[in-house]
Amino acid sequence: LAPRARGLIGIASLEGSGIFVSQKRSMASSNVSATTLPTDADVVVVGGGSLGMSTLFHLQKKGLSAVLLERNQLTSGTTWHSAGMLWRLRPSDIDIELHGYTREMCMRLEEETGISSWTENGGLFIANNDERFEEYKRLAETGKYFGIESSILKPSEINDVHPLLRTDDTVGAMYSPSDGTIDPSGIVNAYAKAAKKIGARVFERTGVGSVETTPSSNPQTPNASVIQSVTTTSGHTIRTPVVINACGAWANELAS
Image (cartoon, rainbow, N blue to C red; front, side, top):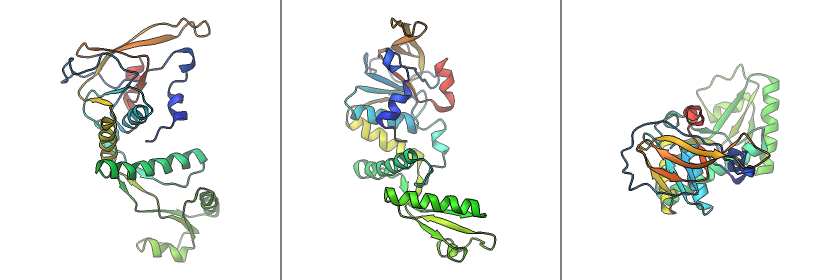
């Protein structure tokens, strides 16, 4: 949900040779007239789910001219039925930082747009064996470095957090009060509203029909192609050097 500069570069692993691997969503007819669509863009994001909309917002915020195309409606793919659970204590430091940033963005976007997406209901992690309990203890220690509050609980203390749980077969638990859930439709619509405020353009019911490329002139990548433009299913062409495939389960459809 929260691409950072490092992650965005990772989407285009061939960027250094002037190549950007594209990701398109589906191929549906467009209800948006061709006169509404731009003729040029620094980057075209394809796919109106949480990753696509977050990417659009962050790229536009970096000063690029960003356009998003979605063949149906925003969140109509796999995003809308996502569980949206976010727990802040993770084995990877990068995951912890990304989850923390995502949480902050949910709250920041609500203040900016009035669209709520974050519910801070806490996370309770139950250990039924010593190995899992030790893992939770390590996560709690890691959290101290990042300033994330948590508590290691004895079985007798678990019911103070969740009275309905049976605890006679537990070894202990970890409670992380700042965990929560993200409403997937809410966060996408909040990102969309914020992105449009800073100049990004979003086109729903606009499918991608093709991505035009030319052979790479880079001798280090002789078999690669360089993106020139995107053509929608309505026949409108947008000249762009960068296409980001944020199509989720439909990514291979665009990539092919």
